[in-house]
Length: 126
Image (tube, rainbow, N blue to C red; front, side, top):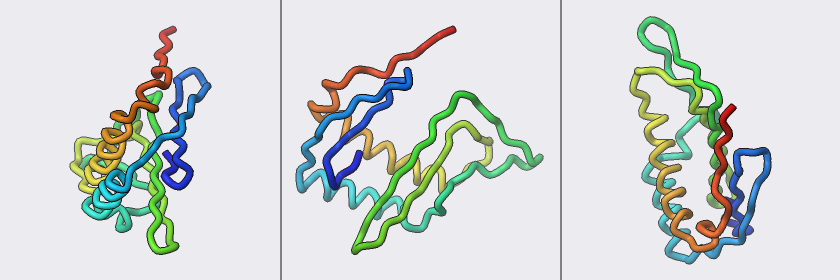
C-alpha cells in the first residue's frame, strides 16, 4: 500500500498482481501513524532477522513471505524488511513489533471495500 498515491497491490500467488485505488481517510492515516509510533518502527534496523536459538540454529521455511514497510515523517523515510521464512524459538521483540505494525496495517486495509473487491490470493498445490 502506497499511502501517498493510494494504490494497494496484492500478489495473487501466481506471479500476477491486482491493484486498487484505496481511499484512506484522515482518521485512517492518523491510525497508521500511531501504529508506527507505538511499534517504534523508526528504531528497527533495515532488515529484521530472527535471532538464532541457544544452539545457534534457525528454522528455514520455503516458500516464505518477504514483508516490507516504508514509513515517512518530516521528509525522512525508513524502510524495514522481514522474511518470515527464517524463524527460531527465541523471542525477538523486534519481530513482535514489526508483526504488530503489519497486522494493524493489514487489518485496516482488509476492511476497505476496494481491497475486498480484489481477487483472492490463489494457492497452488503440486
